[in-house]
Image 1 (cartoon, rainbow over the protein chains, first blue to last red):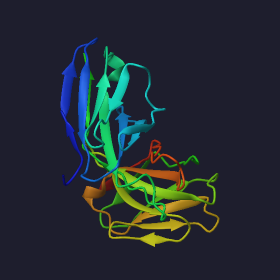
Image 2 (cartoon, each protein chain N blue to C red):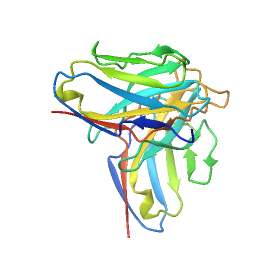
Image 3 (tube, chains in turn red, yellow):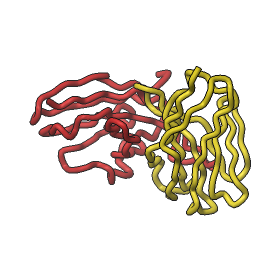
Length: 118
Length: 112
C-alpha cells in the first residue's frame, strides 16, 4: 500500500482481556517495527522483524506481549491479560531494509492504534 | 547508540527560521544523526539525516559541527503546520537491528 496501515485506530478493552493490533507495512518493506508511546513520552521500541523473524525483541516489557509476522508482511501485536498500564498508542513502522551503505534507515510510521484499558 | 540531549520546548514566529539544537557529545565516528518529527495524533515522520557533512532537502537543513558533538536542524521558514515534537536520534549505521531509540524530543510551537 501507499503507507503503513494500522487497525484498529482505537481499541477500548477491559482489564484482563486479550487484544490484537494489526500492522500492514508498505509493500516490499522487509523490516517492521513496533513501538509504544505513552502520553507525553517519545516512542518506546518494542520489537523489530527482519522478514518473518524477530531480530530484536528486547523492548517487549514482559511475556504478556507477543508479536508475529508469519509471511513477512502483515504483523500482529498480541497482548494477553491486559492491564491499565498497557494503555498507550501502539505505533508500527516499516523500512525497505535494515541498513544501507549510506546509513539511511528511514522508517515510515503508521498513525498508530490507541489502546485504552479500563 | 549515543545519547542525545535536546531542549524540551521552543517557540518560533511564523515565517522565521526555526533552529533546533541537539547535543550528542558521545557520538562515534560511524554513527549518523537522524531527525524525525511527530505532529499531534500522527506517527513520527522522517526529516533528514547526516554523518559529518551538512545536508539539505526540501524539508530542512542539518548542520553538524566539525567535532560532530552537536547538530542543528533548521526549518528555514516555519509555518504553523511545523508545530510538532522534533526528535534527534543517533544511530550506528552498521547496527544489526534497524531500531531507532527516541528520546523526549523538542516540542516546537510555531506562533502566528
